[in-house]
Image 1 (cartoon, rainbow, N blue to C red):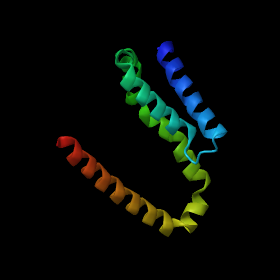
Image 2: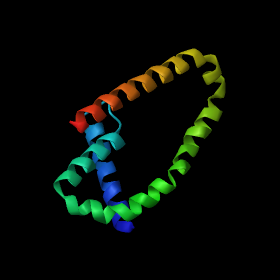
Image 3: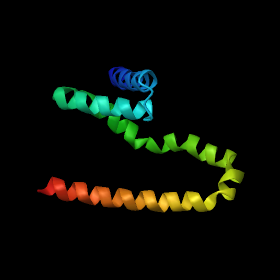
Image 4: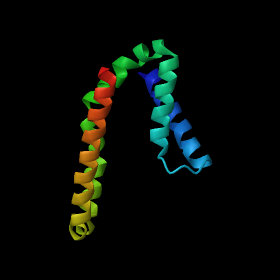
Length: 110
């Protein structure tokens, strides 16, 4: 388990470093996930070593939404004041996600 934590933290740190040093508009953890993805494509045996721990992470993924829930409660007044743009953004982003997912699925089925 410690090995998996170390690998994940290393790639997150690399992503944070790239984002900070290159002044990228992409969050560091996203860059770290992409780096980890490409590394796993190169080193396929590492995925099997990380699998048990990452499966446990996914089982407890709902705990990661607690900070977001607290943030919504803290900024509740602002959310109530700006509810229309938030709803429009949520509907638009959901529609875009569905369309992109469908197109990728169709492309992968070929």
